[in-house]
Image (tube, rainbow, N blue to C red):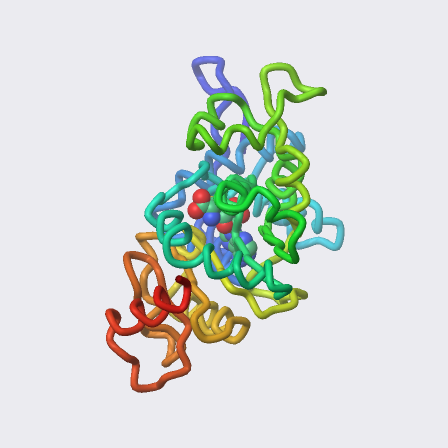
Length: 303
Ligand SMILES: C[S@@+](CC[C@H](N)C(=O)[O-])C[C@H]1O[C@@H](n2cnc3c(N)ncnc32)[C@H](O)[C@@H]1O
């Protein structure tokens, strides 16, 4: 129940065990995220705001709404409230160094020869990862947007996809870009003190709402997939299924980048061999060649 407590401030509503289990069960089934008991205070705090916005008195009524046929909108909003959207430009910069040194020169050369090149940021949040890939490509090849190169950004949360599509960031956020990357953003016409992704970047990127647990209406093969800091709260089985599905959309030599807290890709059958930290190279060679021989083949092929 909500209401005024003794001190006159609004009391936090109570979440019963049954209600917590029901919310955690829904989140697991729908998103793959495991909400352990340790997350209970976070759930109460974030969803109390939803109760206030909806003018609901308690979690019992809220859970009834979630389960009702009128609850679809709120189910989406609850997912937005309970997912973590923290991101920034050039996060885990070692991955972008790997792309610049070992991957993009080869892909750009192939795109210039007419090949289709596709990159996917799966779980892109507000878009910084996608624009970082675009900036890294444009820094190497200013005409990249004229080639058949596209970067797809997807996320389960429609709110973050709206922000990503808008492509408008504060100057503080853009300060995370290397100097030569900021030239691809322009002062925003609509929002003072902010900057918009420029035309070249916009031509390279596309954003969609997509739940990684559902069907993927995407067309592979992908040369690069980034799925970083997304599966941290997934269980091992869900992670393995995901790595396997990514592998099915990649050809040999393509690279999967995962966040530092989520390496378990090498367990996913024989589809990947590990490269440098958080980098996995698609390989159909079941004997799994050593990392050094794979890296040498791939770098040699690039240059
Ligand atoms: C912490 S952000 C990571 C953003 C970016 N990849 C990075 O590393 O900076 C995690 C994102 O994963 C998304 N996410 C969580 N579960 C998902 C699922 N089942 N399908 C698609 N996206 C999901 C969340 O909405 C959130 O925006």
